[in-house]
Length: 345
Image 1: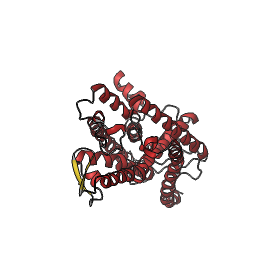
Image 2: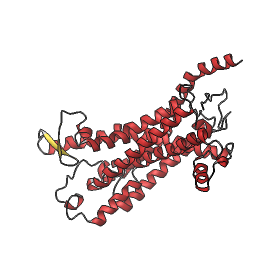
Image 3: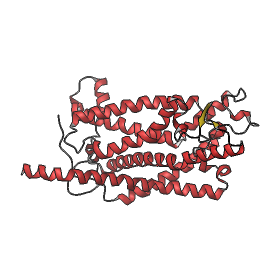
Image 4: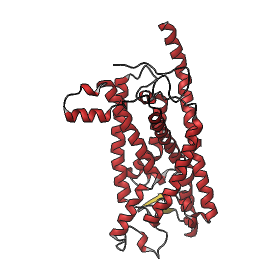
């Protein structure tokens, strides 16, 4: 079964096709339903494997000094901050592992993974099991029904919730990447350089675990710690946003809604809620998800407030950036739709 491009002439939240169907259909004729199912399934399989490796790395390499961005244990008088030290208790290790529930990169990756679980299920069942009531067997029916599109496709509230989930997933992915490449990583590199000056500028410096990095290597902080660490960083901060760009451009036909102001406000709220969640996480685990939330690192509470405001404002910027990709897709596909309509007439 193939699919026709879903692209109408009027933008709206409830469009000529419900958002659930638009999420399950590519606007490109070269990506029919069976190909789309295969692509989504392949991405889901890859993300699942990546999630396992990421969790393995995060659980076996807890952050030093209670800060995930800290490149090393720089306080020799505090051996308890080193997870490899015998005084680092099992209880402290367990508490540190709970940090994963509060780390923004993990939350962002989890949203992307769940998005592909949902959209692959919808795409697959819409193609091969369009009517779940025709499935024989109680267990089989329950599974197909769970994977199928909502029964009430026209429900405005459900459409709003899914659209918001989609926007938050993409925006968080973009935010996560931007924060790492333009804030966190430069901060860590500067932190290392300052450490060099304090040590008399040696040729090499110990980073993260036990591997020496030569300063001449521009990406040694990523690729100098073995393949697993590089795999984790690249997937969290480069592959995942790249997948979401591909999703927006090629894998769904969700359009720009008229009432985007409501979504912008919702993203501001969700970003602000995350800041609160991060402070709860620090209270529970003594780990800051971001260095800029720690007044001891940025110098003052006022600096923390400024960084937090910047984080919140980054959310609507990421959504607007995403809508730019939607506009590119619609501009590219519109001539094809016009030709198809003319031939059909």
